[in-house]
Amino acid sequence: MKTYEARIITKEAAMFDNATLSKLRELRLSAMAEGFREQQDKIGIGSLSFEERFALLVEAEWLCRRNKRTGRLVRQAGFRFPCSP
Image (cartoon, rainbow, N blue to C red; front, side):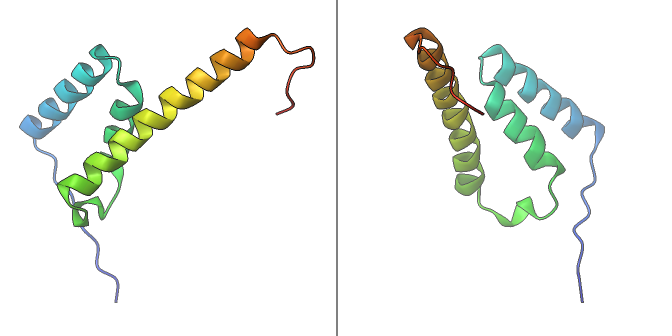
């Protein structure tokens, strides 16, 4: 038997979420903001603890920054042949 978790979004909660997303983007934490938005859409995310959810957000931001840095360094290196996708 499957159980489904329903998420009721109140007007206050939606305003809080939007304010949080805006602040994260203002702080240039776009990957964390995107991860937060994705977590809001996932059913069953409530089963994770705060620390686990926060760790997922930090991991997303760290990976995004590392990938951007690697891409920038590869472009700056000026390799003779571009890397294949």
